[in-house]
Length: 328
Image 1 (cartoon, rainbow, N blue to C red):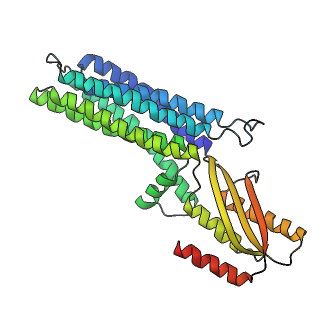
Image 2: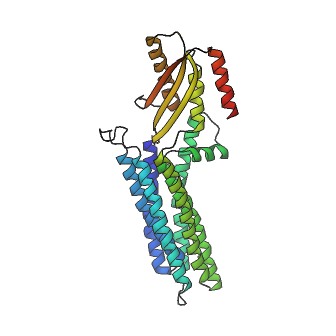
Image 3: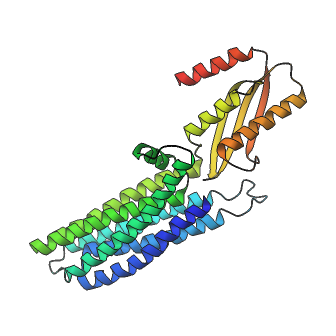
């Protein structure tokens, strides 16, 4: 998954770098406020992709005595910084440019055809980067043997714990929307000779960037605090553990993501009575293996199972737990 994240980020990085330079040239030649807003946006995105790569790199460091659970949350931290910069730089500067244009009676757009060409090229690059991220989501769904449809894609987007891919998708979506807004504003100003549309489009681009940045910050804040794995995976774990004959019920299940592919799982289970210590250890090993299979991970270093004995009949306990699950 790390390799996939890097691929999406690199595609966005090189695409945004070329687009940023092109938009800067267009902004200088046309003097369009909307084009300046798009320039701020693309340069900000380019710098943001560098920060995402920093997060991917630093998150792979080995655990230390000071950080025994590793550095996986570095990815969430740097993605949160990206969201802050997107809001603070691109959004605020776009607002400032738009309002300055409103109060500038001498403002005029020139060489509008240059803007159209650059915006079209930008849309192609941004669309390609978005396509790569979209395909990563699609491949993940297909790997689980599920049908790819709009609902499945939306669910995968909601439950994704990979901040790099999530950020690239949000930024590229915002970029395509910004390009459309800029094109409309420039066209209306050119046709009507009223520069107010150019100013309004700049402000609208700033509002879009702030909205998308707020969404990214909210998602990464949840991951930084400690977000559990998806409900679907939690249900799979509980159902799998309940199929073990020696397990009466699952008392608690707590999970937390340290990175997209690094999860802490803490489970407390109740076992049947009259089993010895060796059998308990065997049951714990079986539980760990089942969790590892569901999560598709190769280490059990962050899987913790606590057991207690229970004298209640097995069937009664399992049935009671399932009924409780259905009610909740």
